[in-house]
Length: 140
Image (cartoon, rainbow, N blue to C red):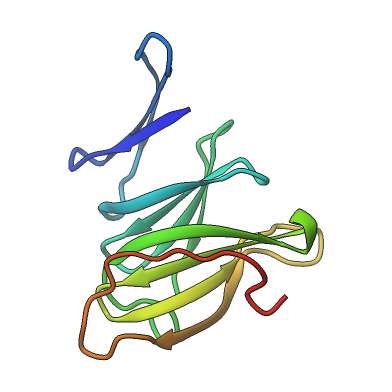
C-alpha cells in the first residue's frame, strides 16, 4: 500500500502495481504534516499542524483523535514512527514536533483501554524536531 497526503486535505491510497488511486480519505480538522503505517493494528497514523495525532481505520475511514496540547504537542507534529514491543503485544507511536517535544502514545484499543498519551518531554529546547526513529524496548 502506498499513501500520500496533500495540502488539498486528502490522504490518498494508491495501488502499487497500476498506480491507480484506490481510496481518498478527507481530513477536515487540520493539515496532515506526517504519517506512517502501524502494521499490527492496520492503522494509518498521521501527525497534524494543530499538534494532534490521528489513527485512521482503513476499512471504515473513521479516526481516533489523540490531542493533549497541555502534555503532548502544542504545535505541528513533524514526524511519527511506530514501535512494537513485547513480541508485538503492544504498539506505541513516537512523535516529534516543532515545539521540540517528543511524545509516546499507546495506540492499542482494547476492551479496557483506548489509545492515549503515555509520556512526553521537551527533547530539544527551543528547536524544532524534524525526524524521529525508535526501536526495541522503550521501557519494555
